[in-house]
Image 1 (cartoon, rainbow, N blue to C red):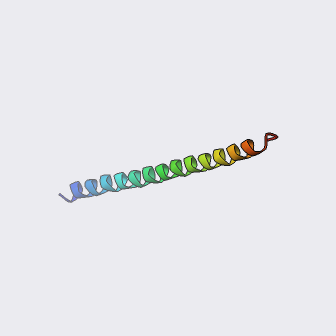
Image 2: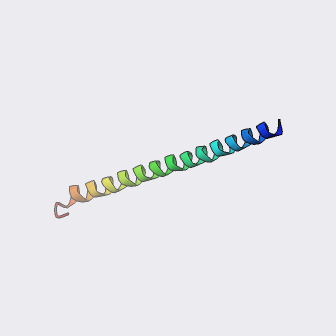
Image 3: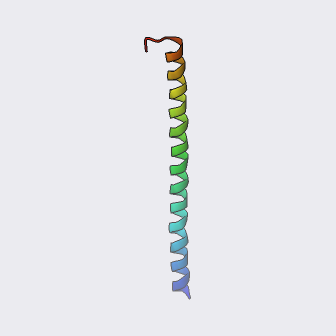
Amino acid sequence: MIHALLVLAAVLFVLWLLFHAAGGLINLIWLLIIIAVALWVVGFFFRGGRRTI
């Protein structure tokens, strides 16, 4: 019984780590998307205002 509980605890711990890693990755992807959109908007306004860039 103790062995089964240890295995269950280890599996849950690994799933918890994977869940947090995936959550961090999703947050990083959202951050990159927001940065890319911000750079595009800034570049769009600069190109729209001055055609030299």
